[in-house]
Image 1 (cartoon, rainbow, N blue to C red):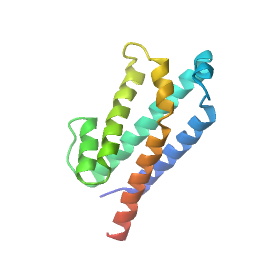
Image 2 (cartoon, rainbow, N blue to C red):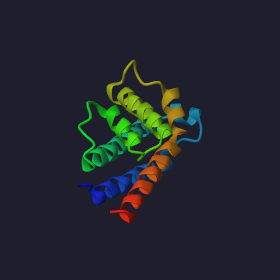
Image 3 (cartoon, one colour):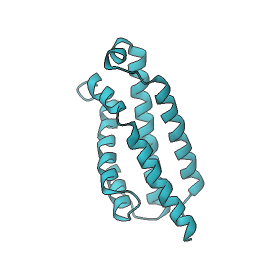
Image 4 (tube, helix red, strand yellow):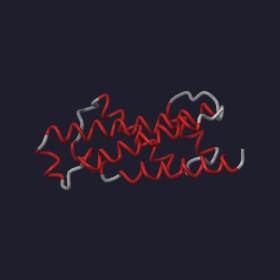
Length: 143
């Protein structure tokens, strides 16, 4: 059974982290690189945002009993197959997951330019929230 309250709680968390990122996000790359604290804060909030998105995906897949995913990318495939997210969003989520792995595991160090560039993709999180919100409203209308 789909736990809408938990999903909505995670989406509220997502909103909170988006707001937090908005408040610390530098206006320029130069501003970003001069402050280690700002760089690390941005990296961490991006990491948490991506984890939050993956958590929402997992809650939906589990709640709808769409099968056990072999790995996180399967979550996105299952949601796209069920038309819960768009194909474009599925691709963005795959990129987010890969970026999260870079942040967490520090593969070849973290490229400051890549992180700063990723800050410009903040609308992807908002679009994800919108797609999930539309899905939740749809299932409310048709129990």
